Image (tube, rainbow, N blue to C red; front, side):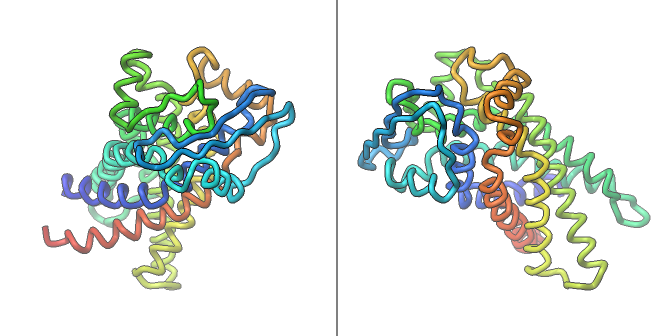
Length: 314
């Protein structure tokens, strides 16, 4: 049962992560929007991810002292126009590695802990223990997957940087090698405290609330155990996870993407962000976060339920 829960969670996570990657990229770009200096010249080219055969499309933009607001749809259109459609999958190789390491660990470990802590007499697990299982599983999963997380953020953000500041990673392997060579092994765990905090919040909110919503729906008799119940419970869980995790996610993204010395840790990043852009800057990218977490969580749990059925006899 233990190994199977990791396999089931890993398959579902990889499918969900790769299928919703463009939404995650837009979320990252929105979270970084407004962070650049007040007046810079930005040249947008082909994304850093290894789609080497895609033709580069240059686009020159002059930013002003007042950073214009941008929405997820307009940003997505601009990315396609200036960098090509393939840019929406910048960093997808890192996403694949991240889901393999981080999500496989957290999903499998959550099920192991949940089974271990379930009351043997009633066969039920109360909400506080579900949350505890999510916190532990998310923290350990994040520590394992942090190098891929850093690489993913950098590769997704690379297209928005001026040409001279591009990292131009050829893929997740090249990103990790370059970070180790240029910034040391510890750079692979940059922002790890934030990653772990976010992962604990997301996993506890996402997995525990899914189980709770699903149980509530089934016990109320409103719906039977099936696709409809899975979709409703998973979308509700995705919304809860988005609300809980977005502020930590914004700071995590900026710390991971920063040039050395830009911020003196997470609290400094949070203080500078709020001071320069206002408190609501911590909810930058919230709409695409919900738009991404919703479909991601739906695909994740619907796929997970189907994979469980397929592997039930193994």
